Image 1 (tube, one colour):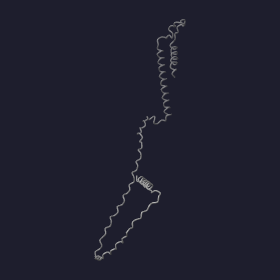
Image 2: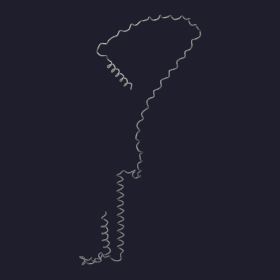
Image 3: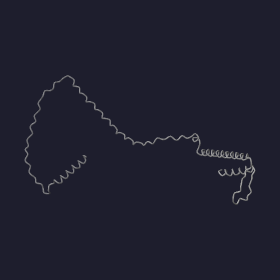
Image 4: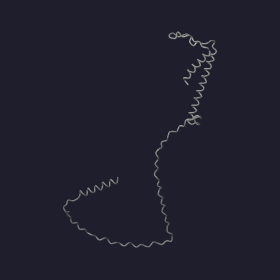
Length: 186
């Protein structure tokens, strides 16, 4: 602000000096009035005064000037606070794994799973064989042989004779039929 004021003041002085110049004609001078010089008044000698009386009293003790106060300690400018650090969201604890998952590698888990599947398959086959055994025992207890074809169906099979089977033959055919039926899923 003071700098701008100084610049403006210099500009005004320059403009005033340029605008206030006299024309190029020589200036006219007027004689200055004669000045009268008056001699300065004579200096009067100072009055003679009696010397001060001599006293034996000690000179008055001069008080020491008050001790200069130390300049105030310049406090450093306040430290700029660092920008707030974005706090990450609280970490969720990892899901608790079962003891089996804690001890086994994924490949070991896969092997364990395959082993369980094989065990289930074996149990299923065992169950099927027990079921087949029960069916065979049921067939063995039948009172008379069953007829595979009681009557020939109407049509082209009319001339076929009736087929009678013994219990052993029925059991064998039922076993083959049962194994064919359930081996499809194996």
